[in-house]
Structures are given as C-alpha cells and as structure tokens.
Image 1 (cartoon, rainbow, N blue to C red):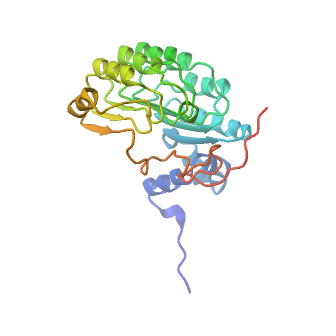
Image 2: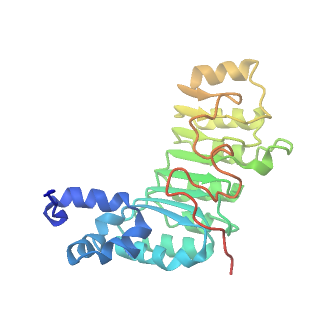
Image 3: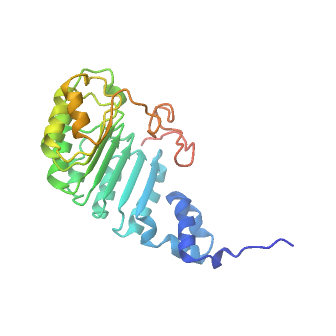
Length: 270
C-alpha cells in the first residue's frame, strides 16, 4: 500500500515556501481554502513582503487590494505587470511606505505622472519602468524624495526606437540622481550629450546598460571614458539574450508571460 504524506506535518518554513511559490492570486483564491492551517499562513503579513501582480484584467484588482491589506505595511518588493492606473498605484503607495523595490512592466492604464507616488516612497532603493512612460519631472521627484535610490531601470520603450535622439531623461538623471550605482537604459533614445551628463553627474555608477541605444556613437573618447569609469558596461549592440522583456520572449501586449504562469487572458478596460 503506498505511503501517504500528511502535508500538515511539514515544518512551518517549508509550508511558507511552498505557498509563496504558488503565487499571490492562488494563495488568496485557492490555497487559503484548503484548510484552517493554510488559511492562517495565507493571512500572515510576512507572506506578502514580495508581490508579483499580473494585472491584465481589472477583475484581479480586488485580490490585489487584499494582498496589499494583508501585508500590513510590510511590503518591500512589488512588480506590477499590465494595468497600473492611478487607482491601483495610489492604493499601493498609501499602504506600503516601506517599499524598497518597485517594478512597473507595460502598464496599460498609464498614470500621467509618477511624481506623487514617488513622494511617498522615501525608502525606495530600486525603481524599474519597462514599456511605461516616464518624464523628466518624475526623475526630478525621485531625486527629491528617494535618497536611497541606487538602481534605476528605464527600459525597452519600443516607440522611441525610430525617433530622433532625446536627452531630457538622461540630463535629469545626471542632475538629480548622483548616488546611482546601477542604471539600465535599454532601447532609450539617449545621445552622447545625455550619456556624458550621466557620467559627469553619477560618479558612483558601477554598471551601465546601453543596449539598443541606437543614437549613441561610442567610437571615440566617450566610449573610452565609459570603459574606464564603468566596471560593468553593456554596449548598444550587445546581446539581449539575458533580458526577460524582449519581443522574442514576450509579444507586444505581454499576453504570454514565460516567467510567471503563462497565458492570462486578454486585457479588459472599464
């Protein structure tokens, strides 16, 4: 007769690890309904310190609110993929002042300015925007309100690749974020003027990712300066093989997500 396992006898740390791996939505919708013990685990604020929210439909918004509420202000690391309008983000920042890492990936419902949100996230250490509009005033707000910010990623803005070079964001970074140590600008329309401003203003930079920055000319002295000043440098023509958000791995609308749990339905808007 085959042996059976009593899952309730697992050590608490093992059970927590299992439940965290099933993902936030499954914790709230399914796992907490298995038994009383699992329900208590799923209500523990420590289970919600790191959250990955796939917001392809607003139907998921109530569960996102439940996860934020259950964190009881302990949320440290948040990724939102898909819909991230003002309502969603405002709910997060009002209840997550301890947040240290924020990543927004292809926000369908764009908030015109992120400045107000950043003013409430003074402990932020890493900020990442993928396929999401960010403006000069938002970089300035990060400089004013996020003194601990060390990592900034402004990546893969497809619409910029065919435009003329623009250095507004790069100039703002060089002027307002002198403590940065890691910077990614994949696919941005930065020119040599903007790059020089970054090198002049961000003297603590250790890594700089310039892949797909097609308006740069690094054949001369500026390229040599980058090599001398930056320990870990990725150039415009370097491979994107290790980058998770390329068109080869995600189609343009992010319907398929290889990092999480596959197809999640088409976006629905109110």
